[in-house]
Image 1 (cartoon, rainbow, N blue to C red):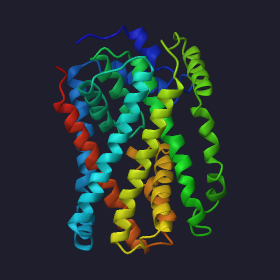
Image 2: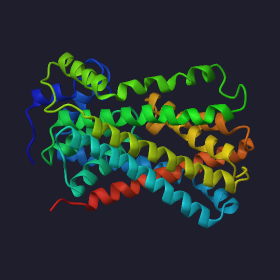
Image 3: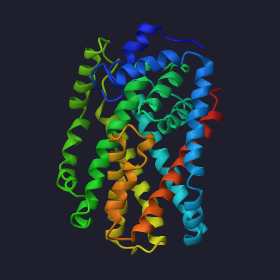
Length: 331
């Protein structure tokens, strides 16, 4: 297994996963990549991340038992299938961005790098999936700078598209349910301008200049960003459908208002969870947002059960994708 020089590694990640200037997450990434040189540390990190993801499922055992009593197994299976489809859409968006940056990969390599790296979401800190993707990618000839930029751009596409999709829920949310944050959410779609290639390429170029690294081999194009956005929006619709299936099973009317609350509410909850980086995979923050959005459509206890079951199903989907990644050894 070969590695790039240490000084290039530091420069590749100095801009951080969100394109920020050096410091904070960037320095954490640099130190983490240096530590991950050891195969023992790599395996230890993977075991830790896997253990935390499995614990997230086991800890919700009582809630799953309640859900099994209140929801039919057919409904739970449909919700799980929708969760897997949602995770696959995020994978497709990531792979499109990777190819657009000039590093197209086969399905096996892409599945291995993305699937295993997603376990890093369950480790507190908000950067470990980026660290894992960078290290796994270099094993297959993908420069760390390209891996980090791909993950950052794909995540940005997901956040921005989620903010826009979340707008469909706001007209149906009970007055005052979101508190002082309600009016601020209406301006979230304005950030969609950053997904325009001329704007996003300038931001990436600026981040690389600040990090004193050479520019990308090729800029992001309209076709690549457009395809990534389509995959991301499809993912939000599928994730919202999962929430809707569970909510209807718990007593929410199967109407257009309920569908809008489910789709928009999940997207908003994910965006807020992403911004709260101190907890693994946005745990807690996403639940609070979904509770606020669905408060007028379901009793509080039913909403709490729904959001916990929804998280467990998505975690199971992440574990399934990681398992596929572990098995997908490139030929």
